[in-house]
Image (cartoon, rainbow, N blue to C red):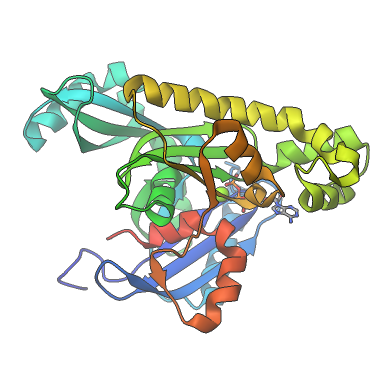
Length: 346
Ligand SMILES: Nc1ncnc2c1ncn2[C@@H]1O[C@H](COP(=O)(O)OP(=O)(O)OP(=O)(O)O)[C@@H](O)[C@H]1O
Ligand SMILES: [Mg+2]
């Protein structure tokens, strides 16, 4: 046990829909070194299923991932998928931390969508409110108790000690967003079934959303539009993407209305952000997740919104031997959540 922090060692765990990933860092100070990492594919829907048998399969998969990656600590920081978390920014009076806690508990029922008794809530002060200078902004998040308890049961049953639960979107901000840029930045994590969106300012999340469009949705559109089997559709999809020039634009035509659904939800989030923070321009959009590799997708987003788009580097805050560079960059778009969890200070 370290005297400098609560927990001396832990690893970050991302329980995704298609893959489980683990990352452990080592060292002290702001920049840590990559120590261990790994991933393992999971089949079916065991990462979201409540069935006991699936929970046991998931626990087994996590144990073997940890073993194969060579991770020896039992301490784990776990991500919470954004469709399980509600987050919002509220204006509060300037209060002492103890008074703030009391006020939030008192007001929570009118702020969070689920009953307070069934929810675990957490908050962090963000600074002065842009609406009312006498108040402060507070980032509030809530998660269903039953969900957290079932995850805890599963992980403790597998022999782990959970040191933190954190929304995936907060981990994305930590691993992908520069903290020294004053302008807000957006992260889009385009996963298997959904896209996580988060807008953050100087490393603090201000808006998070889960949009129900992901790689599977886009693939279904390709299967339907091209009238071919899923394996072949996936090949065409990840080879030609949103290129209008390739295959006479057939892949583009098959998927563009699904992509439009996604971009119109992104647009709504930008508008919502700007109602609270008028005159603040989003500096860039950082894309990650499996489907972010879709050819010409970043270009499409950049043109649509007139905002610079870059491919996220999950290892940007982490040091590693130069010989590992190619290997790490090739999996970078799958590791942003796990890396961000591992970069927590506990
Ligand atoms: N080259 C490719 N060929 C086929 N599929 C791909 C390719 N690249 C990405 N994908 C898709 O990316 C998805 C995996 O993305 P990612 O690792 O971000 O998902 P996840 O984190 O497991 O899911 P979620 O975040 O939704 O829980 C796969 O479901 C797959 O369909
Ligand atoms: Mg994911």
